[in-house]
Image (spheres, rainbow, N blue to C red):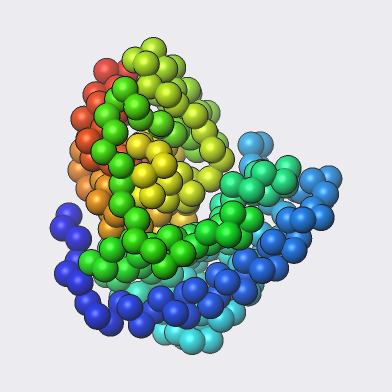
Length: 270
């Protein structure tokens, strides 16, 4: 599916998005400094949630719903509202909760705006790093207001990320990809925040990311930022990534054929 044409009107949403994630980011940063991981709660067998996730979500949703009462919303903890709109905000109020809980700075707030099914705006705020990534469709990608671009490293110099969802099948497929990538000589590691891993590709710090079993709130904002920086995001069959896709392959473009080949040859796509 083709990306939507640039619309000047999408830019009007950037300032309120930044304000909301900025306020939530300040709260999260204060809690991060003194967080005791004994306060974490299990949300599922492999996933935790903290009070910080919920507070961040409340701050952002309250601001955006007040400003855009007719828009739809989808958030990791609160789920979806019942409104029907061309505009859909997708939020992960704390991507990388485990990192947050152990005082690892690789965590972020991820907020995307979708118009008629296509992501058109992305904001990823990493308060502990002092980094805010932004992009509006057709307007380029930025880190702290400075333009960013993908790298052009190939297999020999590439740094590659991977992660998996929490279902048994997704975990097995993720491990299969990791093993196959390592056997092919790719440096492959998991940073613990899909939103930041996508932004790291956009900023030229990392060359690829493969996720088995992702969810829209994990990656929607990062996909906008990545693509505006010149990167690619597809499913495992080289089709442009869509909100409904359960898997994602993202890269600087140069490495894309290599990671898709590993995915196909190792059966990760099945």
